Length: 341
Image (tube, rainbow, N blue to C red):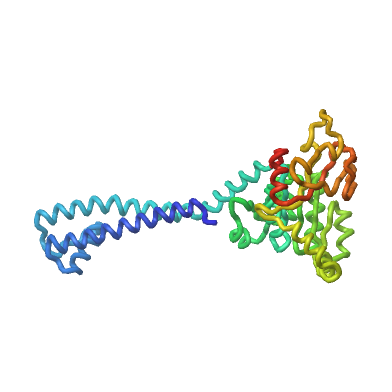
């Protein structure tokens, strides 16, 4: 995405060049028609007049030509002065454009709360960002490759340039205000260091780390990662499952597809679905099927235990969640009825 400041400077430069060309054409035509100069002499007179170098005239000018020359000199002073100012300003400010852009982005990051930090914008990091963006979750990406930042940075993808191993960079990404960190660096040792640093800075931060080697799994857990993902294991298991239970896996894949209008599964805090002071005490009392068309397929209690296909009489408790399944339009209705957006 092109920086608005650069676009503005380009517009001003193009305007200045256009004015200079127009002035040059007017000067050549004026000297050609008024003084009957040759095209070369007319161009010569126009250039020395515009640049005010002080060379002599090709031939004496009559009164009309002198008035035209005065007009040309006064106009050229304004236009050439404008062009020089714009070009000089662009040259001097070019080095500051990047700093201004970083300040603007940092101001946006500083305003975030309960956001997600993604360390590394490789294949896994990019996929995580796409998913979070589809669910309208605020996030910040830490990336040390400047070319990647310049290629993908936009208003919806805020980047912090630096090494995620450094505490200063994590603080710049707002780790003290974040609720989750995803470490998706390609090297397990780097992920381990990020997890250690993040856990030291914020004790209650949820940390999800990528691991290439199975031997790194336990180390990352000991370092403080809540969840450790092994992409190669997941990929191999997924491919094998397509052989063993292909229809089931394709169905699950369709549920996992996320876009602007095709979310099929939603996880919702029970506090958002009912008022504790009302008579709503069970899943049946929520009456989600009747109100939205969605079906409750899972329940997570306050202790983090999951119940698949919970009974309708299951009591709702604080800090628990319900997982609902529905068509995209039913999920949208759920969000609208309970103001979840």
